[in-house]
Each structure stands twice: as structure tokens, then as C-alpha cells.
Length: 113
Length: 117
Image (tube, rainbow over all chains, first blue to last red; front, side, top):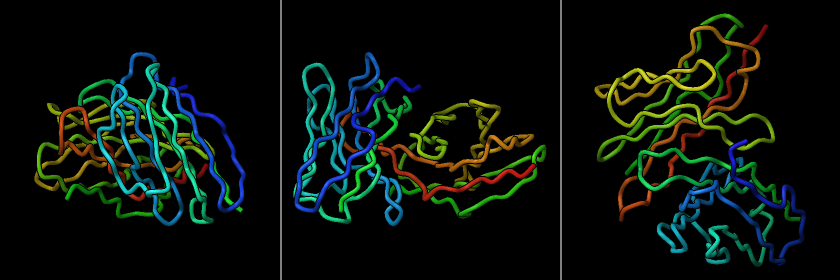
């Protein structure tokens, strides 16, 4: 158990809908990262938050957004969903500093039908 | 650009034999390198990392990795493979460009390790 929790585990929704994925980082970790894992794109970085502020953005679509709340949990919002958004979405957290490893949650499997 | 390559989609070894999963990297500064393992329907588990110091890094579950600066490689090794080691392995490099405390991971495409009894 990495200490990072994600809900829900599975999500099935229709095209055009909006969903929210939730992540709670390990106790004490200020950084939260979101990644997308798909068969064709592999593991791709989406966005990072550090202590409530956005710190880095990857190839995140404009239809996607995220935030980190004062209690440090984070939410990833995906809207106007398309079939191609079906993927595993992982949240990770780490201690401050580049030398620290990231710990991953179990992921949310999103299926868009 | 920072990048990582895992040249083998799959590695097959017999139980008890040594295993190697290959990784090469390209970075503009100091490499911060990581190995993760992913079991089916699970998240990624951290195995080991190279930040600085000894070129041979020891990690979880008997795994180790050898950092080679001249060959820009960071191969994952284990002296004696177990069937339970069968999983998907990812090499990753930390992207340290940008402001402090950024550090997204850039992953290789993954290597499936199959250990046969």
C-alpha cells in the first residue's frame, strides 16, 4: 500500500459527460501528480500541484482541469468526454525535492462508451 | 529533450536465472532515474532510484540497477528471477527543468517481464 488513495476505482460514462477523479496524497506529501496510462500513449504526465498551486503542465487537454485543495487532496476534472479518453488515470505524490520518488495510487479506470 | 527508452517490449527468463531489463536515457543535466513495477490492475510500485553516488543501486524485492554514465544506461537486474517477478517494468527519468519542486516523471514504454517455471 503506497499510502496514496484514489476514488473511484472504476468509472463508466458516456461521451460528452463530465467526471471527477479524486486523489489523497500520502501524509506529509505536498506534491501531487496526475498521469494518464493508455495503450497507445503509454504513461503520460498531465499536471502537477504543489501545496495548492499548479507547478507543471504536460500534455493535458483543455477539456481537463485539476486543483489541489487546502487539505492537499486533489481532483482531476474531465469534461466533454470522448472515447479516446478511456484510460487509467493515476495520481502520485512525493516529498519536496527532485531526489524523492513518487508514490502512485491504485488508479481510476475510466471507460467512455 | 529528456527521454527514456526501453528497447525490449518483452523479456523472457527461466526461474532461477538472472534477469536484465534494459533502459537508456537522454537528459540535459544530472539524471534522476527510477524503476517502477506494475502488476496487473495495480498501480506502479517504486523499486529503486539513482540520484548520485554508487553506480550500483539496490532496491526492493532483490532488484538492483546499474547506472552507466558513458553508455547513458540504467539497466535493472536481479541475480535469480522468480515467477512472481512477472510484471510490467517501467524506467523513468525525472524532468528537473523548470522551477523548483517540479519534477514530473518521463516514462519509457515499459517492458513486460515473463518468468517461466
